[in-house]
Image (tube, rainbow over all chains, first blue to last red; front, side, top):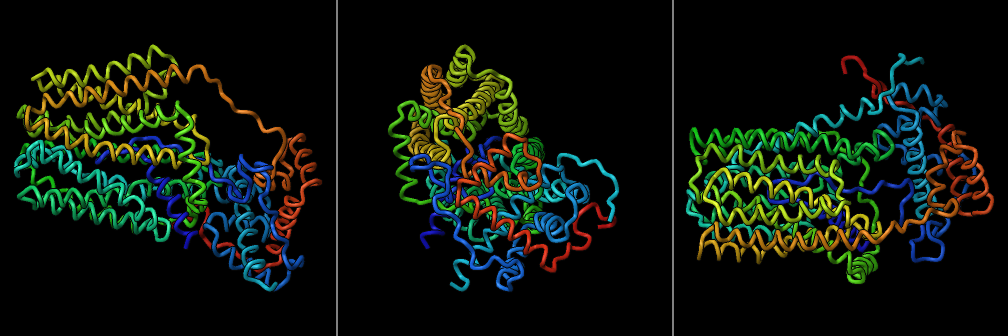
Length: 138
Length: 479
């Protein structure tokens, strides 16, 4: 409850940022780049170690890639990815295609392809961790 | 499988193709023929400058209240459907407005327009942002694409303003409302058909109490920042006043309906031109700032003196243009003076303050315009423009003594490392950065665990039975 209220407040604050009058919007609005891992995972400027982990990522109950719980969590997490991210991560990591092929097939620059791969892997890791560590077996 | 050799353009094909329906929808919802002749129509159904001001004040009171619930909806629900609902509110407002024969009904229509604005504000931006992130992996191209979307929108505004003026001159102001309806209806359908992004930009929850405290502390402890906050709010207030009350000058001078079209198109165009000029003017130079700052009150002053339509239109266009430039400048000053964690909160506070100040301003303007004349009420605009000029000059001269306090990060932190993991694993990092990553990993338990889990995820992907979506990517012929 508190969580979604604060999310909604963050969202509302962002929308309020848009300067406008009754009919027309101004053309520019500053937008911070979205980091790969949520900012809240790291310490703020006021804390002892700014930009370092606030809490280390909890270790997973398994180190076996074929573990059925891990595989189930992975499949669910893959389904939640945006389409292009899913294509990239399946082609690169699932099917072992090379970077140049994947970039060409999707019409991406090498840098865009790597950026998507970074974000897709990070989101998969995050969602798997949520399933294994918080909801999974202790 | 070998792909046809293709030049990898900087904008992926999928991005342009995916955003096209959105741009069409935004363009269609910008086709609002009644906006330029609204004040003319309002006068015809019995509005006086005073009741126009009451309507504007009521509107200003409602918008900030709607902001939060619409933020909640956008976060919890589909943003396509939010835009669909916004379109329905615009449709309802237009229909009710067109059917109005008295003041209260039309104020109801204006409130409905407030719902449209609250729902749609920022929603298109966040959709564009997420689509760019989904199709390119970074937000670098966001500015370019939101810029294109805004050009489509303002083009539609300007063209429909011209057409609306012609339509009202040829037939009646009331007709412009009904002609708008089909465009809005098609826009609603187009929004609902759009392929919505799965990411949510505002996914980052904030520790609310701490955040609010930090925001207030930032505003209260920084005197320079207080000036900038007030500057931003006043610029917002005055530009709202020009767009809201400016047409009353034309009504008072009995301008022909057809003139309202080009007049409004010129006002709307200043927003785009302002952005263009801001990028080219050196606003660090006090002389240029002083020139801009003093031209605005002069333009507002001429509104109190003249009886000529040409001068009125020119003065308002100049004022709107200067305000567009100043608003971008105020945004930049705010951006530079506020730490990033509270930037959104402070900017949002500026927006709210602007609406809150507009409310009494509007009522006073309306009262004065009734007891004296619209032309005399131009003194309110002049006073506001003078205040803005003072604040702008003060913040320019104060800000000059401060040099950029940015200190470069001493060494690689965890927050930077997580961005580099793929480049590190792919071996495309420059040697010094590669060494820095390696060194960090040897000493940081958290990052080692993170990279280990990324490795395990990759391994699990190799073992999983996954398939590419057939025919999804690439320019599939016939798709």
